[in-house]
Length: 61
Image 1: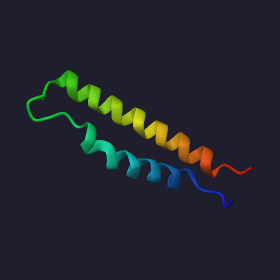
Image 2: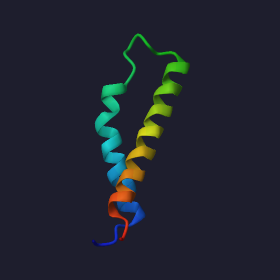
Image 3: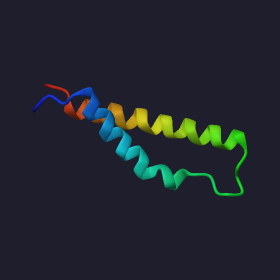
Image 4: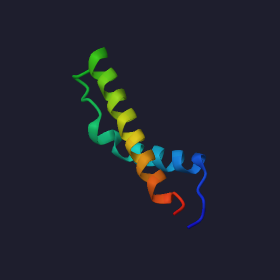
């Protein structure tokens, strides 16, 4: 399997994260700072999960 750069892995993880961002976005009547912070934390967790998955799928064996 070809080596994949960290930049490519990050871009793949970013695209996957953006694909689910709308699904977990707070509704308009949930505009509090706490909810927005929680939303960003969840997106960060999703990005990390996707990055680790892409990394493990592309690591050289």
